[in-house]
Image 1 (tube, rainbow, N blue to C red):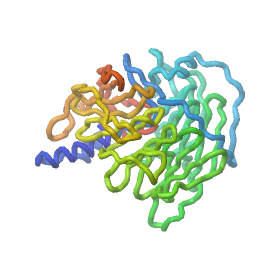
Image 2: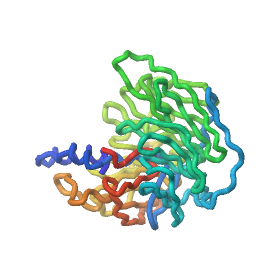
Image 3: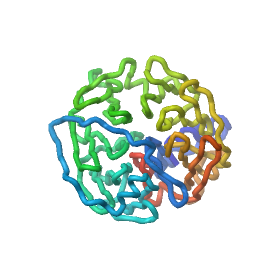
Length: 376
């Protein structure tokens, strides 16, 4: 279960006029929001990939580590092809094979050269399936993504008194770190810096000033109208932004000043070309929308009681998680929630399902969404 599922089930319970589910107990059991963000995963027959290979800028900073050319890992082709990847404990599964990491995975992302992960203590490491390198450290914050990735790059905010943006190119091993500017709002307002998205040579960072864009080294632009207290960026793809605001509306557009409004809630994820948005509409029902017009697109009926889209394989294929059964009270069954995985085609409005029955609250599994989906 995720915090997004939790919020929806709370609303369902209110509407049914039945006792509200013990949300705190669910959270303590390890239910978490399953976020999307440009990486997709799946076990067995369901394909999972990083949605699109974006190029981040080379950030100049006061710390730079460079790596030389490296031998090719026997997993290189699988990662380059964005083959399915997920982790259970210290074991990463990809292309029907496994490899071991130094520490258990708390959160990770997949690049086209391997995985970048954070262990339970927040230590960040990269592995290509054969070699592992320690890169830095981050701080986990409830409800926030700790890592973001596209192409061969992964990004995070370094732990410490002064926030620093860190980016690794896993193809070369190069790590760049750049100090983030301190917030300018009153001291009582504290919105920790987070990497919100990356797209087309830009890194989007959100903090108490709002939304800033880092391009070409240390050049920074704070986007007009991006109030960090009143909006949260979910995704950027091909210059299209998707965000939620404090009115409960979902916005999509190429600028914050001229968006299309989608009457939905939850976490949104854009297709790699930015033409489609997947976002929950109501009661665990995902909706697909044309980002140019806001028009709702047809979608398959999978029969799942609760379903959330969290990533895209390509412009026509998205991935989702599904809970087969949800009772009217929204309470977890004995043994906890189980999650199946789906890949769905927009043109054919059909899905393939992998009944994995993964249990994020108890089996130590992790998917490449850059956050811990089982930490209460």
